[in-house]
Image (cartoon, one colour):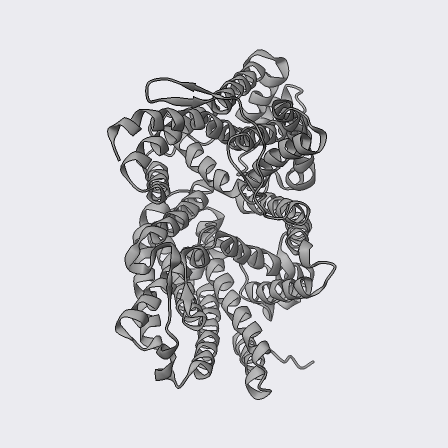
Length: 322
Length: 287
């Protein structure tokens, strides 16, 4: 018997890159917009999975890093006319630093207290930005159309944003894979299962958790910078949207918490379903209720999510699907 | 802003604090008994508002009878939520129960938006006002305080003076031991979820007599309840009432000195500091 082993990571990256190339090749702008959103959601879900799935800390307000990245990059581009790519990187670093600063105190809290803290941080940030005039206050900031000229026009800027989001998504997945397969990932999962035992075997939980939190904050900040660059307008309600934050947790659970492929499958499935419900006349109004029902059924009966259930049902797949 | 505005504003805030506290008691009771953070809290508050609105606008029922009806509906509805969404995952890690109650949140908001749209509503009620030197107390606010206090007293009477109430507390303290004493813990959990929901709906019903509202209004009060609950100590109903008063007073006092929009920033900062320094709350023992 010949055993052919498809290497997991290159396969997943190739599939995503190929799918991302479809709207470029077929020159289909509406599909490009849709995939842009899916890639963003994949980034958000995979990031939150690193702190929630691997480490067991439910970061409910994780969208705060998306908002911070978006705001800092937007402000840099608007005020100093900084190039988008530079602004994106320049925004992700402070977001990661902030994750380290707030992570040190709040990651000491366990369970519900941590989850509530992250909600508090997001809401505090949102209300602060609503009042912070240098960043536009409640109205937010918006681009003049001429800002896109240095990228060759709005159309080219949209392409640049799309390519960037693709690269960010691929980088997030790669990071997620290597974290999970590394010794560091093992220490995170040990903390998830039993923090006290993890300490006994020589893991420094405080340090490991903060590092995981910083990594999981870096990519959403890049995604936020890219999203709002393309969007051309940023305001607090949209940047620190708690509903979107919770949606990314839903995607993780739907696909399979703690797996590499789960958040990808979950994000794609969730977005596809939402698109279907919105365009379907019968369900358009009830889409939230149906999303709720789907979530409830998943939480109650398919606890491991799609990828997790597959792995549990067919143990041999575990060698192939991470 | 002058200091003359301070007293009326503080009194007004304090009175609102009772209503906030009542909602927070519902949230904290559920957490205290079963360690579940109820994310359907906000929409349930909004349902309380709409219960009063529908009863008074369609059937001409007195809004305060509507408040009573909201409490009864809340008790039944909460029990239903428990059996549908929470019972199966009651022993699962917190993420599971968070998402289970959040799914209820989505369903209520989804159906509610279709039925009621998101346009603002208000309950037409005017009970006059008490006027003193520079201080005006609206009748609706005074009645809301009285009802909130009565509801809180009823909760205490139930928890400490009745057999079933003691059983609920026993389940909260130690579920396994309570079961060994022959208590049906599942029924007690369902009852506690029902009471928590009833308190939230009552609070929403009272709020509907004070302010205009939409189906999405519950979200604001849900976040406020989180802040209050943490201030008073998660799982501590007395703390929730005290926390409600503190937040109400704080809102009343702060708005005199700083723009209204900055007030939530301070609320959330207090919330974060409390979680760090005294997670057991103002009344709890030092962490």
